[in-house]
Amino acid sequence: MDFIWNWKRSFSKPVNIICIILTVLGLMKIFNFHHFCNFNHWNQIGFKIDPPYHQDGIVYDYYSKNDLKQLKTSYQWKIWPLPQEVDPLANNSSIIKIETSPFAMSKLLFIDVIYIMTNSRLTERHDHLKKVFHRQGISMESVKWRMKWNQTTCNSNSTHSYVYKQLNLKDKPLDQEQQRRCAITIEHVDVWHEIIEQKLQLALILEDDVIFVPFFKEKLTRMIYTAIRSGALRMNGTCAKIKDKRMTDNEWINQNPMIVIGTCFNLHDQYFQKHLSDAPPLLSTHKREVSRCTHAYLLTLCSAQALINQIQEQKNDFLPSDHMQNYLIRLSPTLQSFWMDPPLAYQGNQINDTDKLETFKVQTYK
Image (cartoon, rainbow, N blue to C red; front, side, top):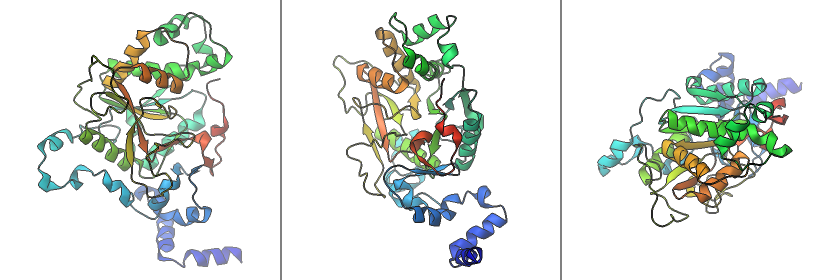
């Protein structure tokens, strides 16, 4: 009887009938209607500011509430307009010139390569990420999996000189916790070197437990165009130069940016209206409070070069990747950290995982 009642209730609303038909015909995944059809389930659970919920490759946070019954992102994101939404009467030739993305294999505008830091043994995470990318319409062809390092290889005698040179470490041994975190840190630094070597204009750097919010692709695109228009992001390869005096903490233009699109521990900018589910998106400078973990951030060629330059400026203590970013960007005369709110990405170990993936419980980089 419960089954019959639930089936009748499913047909009580037109939207449910549409979703059932799409499911039966196998069209749900093809047309990516999951956000549209799952909203009744999530409304019953209810939304809280923290923690977000994960289901079927999508993370639903407090700010996704208005996305659930839509076939496109909710209205507040239009504050960051796409080029076709900009007033055509403005006739701003400089905007028109810079708002043209070259072909991007990733299907994310302007982004040349997507790097994923991982470990070869975490195959469930790899399969899950492929699902996540498919759900968001992101091509796997541009993905570079980085899984060279683990605790053994990072702390062996044969790699000792390489690791200490790459990180410009002080001549002292790593303790047990530092040895465990060595692999993820050196993976990030190796990627920064590769961005420079391959002259990549913009790279997205992820860790293997990342999960994206609904309409990730469009929201990221809106942010990138806004950062370009405002001068925070330059795609022409022009780097900020060292000035006679140190740049201010809120420098927006003359800087080399790292744009943090993920968050952890419910960190947001103080001016983001985090208690509003339809809070307008915000890009903010964070020279002193740099990192929100290292599972999702953007680097330009200039910012990767500035990070490597700063590593070589002084001998360093070993730091985990997020603490290292804090340290380097505070010291750098040109690096600036930007936070994006609401965030576009969360870590699998900091969400309510209704899919109950065992991989999010695994301690990585053993």
